[in-house]
Image 1: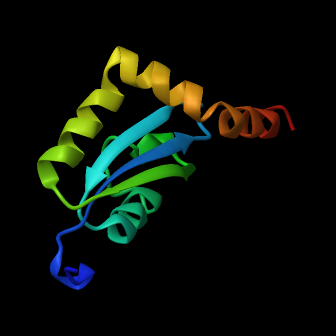
Image 2 (image 1 turned 180 degrees about the vertical axis):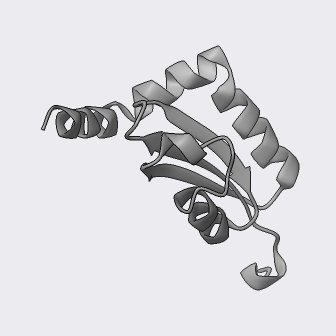
Length: 99
């Protein structure tokens, strides 16, 4: 078995914006660092969409697979699929919106 410390890590992640109530789909090799950058307003794409919440992420050991997944999730069918498999999470978040 290969030690996981020797394997590259890539993440596709989904943030929820409590400002515009939409997804942000991203890719990174350093998830914790990237989330800190989003939270502190240092990512242009989400700077004015804060506050944000991490609602889902996927882990890959191959960069091409991770990038392909990110691109798929950003497509029309990918977003539709994303909304379907996160429907309970989205419903819970939308309840907070009404509070």
